[in-house]
Amino acid sequence: MSIDYSEKIPNNVDLVGNRKLQRALESWQPNFLNWWKTMGPAVPTENVYLRTAVAVGREGWAHFDHVPMDEYRWGVFLAERNTDRRIAFGEQKGEPVWQQVPGEYRADLQRLIVIQGDTEPASVEQQRRLGESAPSLYDLRNLFQVNVEEGRHLWAMVYLLHAYFGRAGREEAEALLQRNSGDIDSPRILGAFNEETPDWLSFYMFTYFTDRDGKYQLGTLKESAFDPLSRTCEFMLKEEAHHMFVGTTGVDRVVARTAELMREHDTDDIAPYGGIPLDVIQKYINFHYSVSLDLFGSERSTNAANYFTAGLKGRWQEERRKDDHVLTEDAAQIDVVRAGEITTDEVSALLALNHDLRREYIADCETGLKRWNRVLEKGGIERRLHLPHVGFNRHVGVFGGHHITPKGDLVGEDVWAANQDKWLPSEADKTHVRSLMRPVYEPGKIAGWIAPPSKGINDKPVDYEYVHFP
Ligand code: BYC
Image (cartoon, rainbow, N blue to C red; front, side, top):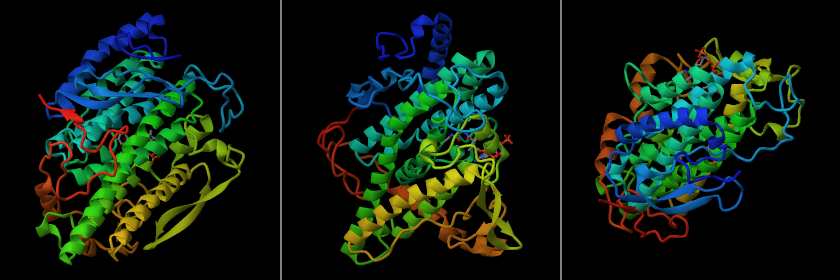
């Protein structure tokens, strides 16, 4: 069904045909808009060159235009329904997928949807003030694009809560606007979403590492036997790709500028020349990667096993895997810390599903590192960036409660405390990065700590006026 933009809430789920649901969502809409006004982008704009979804098919799904941000058409878009779709894994493998929520899985599905939904507005809150210090209009526009789409992803989850979870779902939808990132009394659910995103290097790292967790989690929910969730996630993944592009190319450009300044001044210490030193970039990688790894939950998880067995949450690219998709007979290795050593244990493959997903994620993260190291190589710099050990700076799972260096050595509290500032951004590093964050709002101009993008958005030139101010 095509997207109907004549309605108050654009959608392709036939909202007009369900008055009760339409009214419920229309009564949530002002609360959302109020949240957007108070917790969304802080910098005032007249309009922004934004992408809006106009169809859900493969081709030509998006339309670009200058729009006032608070008039953005947030709506409910699900990928096309495949009427033959069958459950691909778990104990009900082969049966038709569900169009309604089976009573026995209600609580678990609601929990997964609430956790997913909670991250979306959280990221908008975390990035609220970044617009005040954008390095270019191009970057400012990308930030806002990410923000409006995270807002839409909140709509995606709220639609499911309203449409399939009755009163409890409506209450959860309200609560999604009441918890706030970093709020002492009412924080967001997952750790990484209560951290600050105080500068643009953090933003690029967040969109590289944390949005990538989103890609992998959405990928597993796309496999779900609950078809509306699957279809919602499928379409969200399409939008998500741009968010990771912002992260990947953002870090590319910071690394490129750093290499340029290192060469120009023949020193690693480029801070006095207005650049971000390579070891600071490495520390930001260490931080954002480790915080994002925590989002995968424990290596050994009965929750994950139960979700899989029930058909609620599959594996990354479930249907391409060459096994029985039931996994009751399979084993897997997971990391453990035993007797002062990092080693592995064999467990049922079902218990190791968070670990399995995390492994896929890590392999994907490596591609960014390769890319950034190529930028260094091309820039004539010998030093390289790398991912720290998987156990470094972890708070969730087997590594939580241990101190592990970026190289993977288990160390005591004293060694950790003495080296923490070498491995994670120190106050001085953060202060320096923040000192570089001055807005550059002139079309085609770029801040001195980052290289310009190689091309503009939607074939527009880099010096296009992507954002108009009042
Ligand atoms: N922080 O068996 P365990 C995105 C809790 S990002 C706090 O280890 P499980 C986006 C857990 O809740 C993707 N608590 O973990 C990115 C459980 O509590 P209960 C978001 C945590 O359940 C950028 C207990 O520890 N989507 O979309 O297998 C911008 C033991 O649980 C954490 C999802 O995450 C943590 N990090 O896995 C915008 C998908 N980790 O039940 C958007 C939905 C664990 O004992 N969520 N706990 O009270 C899930 O699939 C799973 O809930 C998790 C955890 C993967 C998060």
